[in-house]
Image (tube, rainbow over all chains, first blue to last red; front, side, top):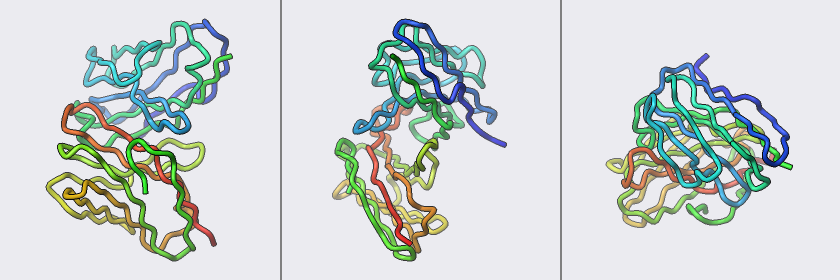
Length: 115
Length: 113
């Protein structure tokens, strides 16, 4: 089944403890992106990647890192999580490198609570 | 209706009625628009998209209308069913970057049996 998967789906952690949320797609998509979704603010883009080894900042990149060493994987890294990073996170992918001009397919989400 | 930037509005309809969800955008350079459905506890799911060289596009039970004159987008759902209950939001590419979609905050659709 063609899909975007994220792990873990739920995570509770403490301030300052490094964590990684994994994202993988099996559709051979060029473009991948991370979003956070907060009440009243909608989906905001954190980082995106147009292809392997090519990443760029979105609207809210502070406190996050990403890497794209392989086409299928796009992990989101929080080096030192803080409570304001408590949110619902979504990974998405699209077929071509121009993810802003075509359908993005979303993963199921990762709910993160930082204490 | 919804606008990219406003609080979440709600729409309540009876099962079998048609639903219309609205979205306003501010950038006349926006050239690609997409509607997503998000059910509780799930990721956004693609419904339908439209490019700025079109005024209307139809899918299965859904129609998207684009009025570029007033910068307005709407999603029409025919014969609304309880399974259509969800948050619906529009997204646009504002023409400034091919790598970015800007998402609205969404409209909560509730279908009453």
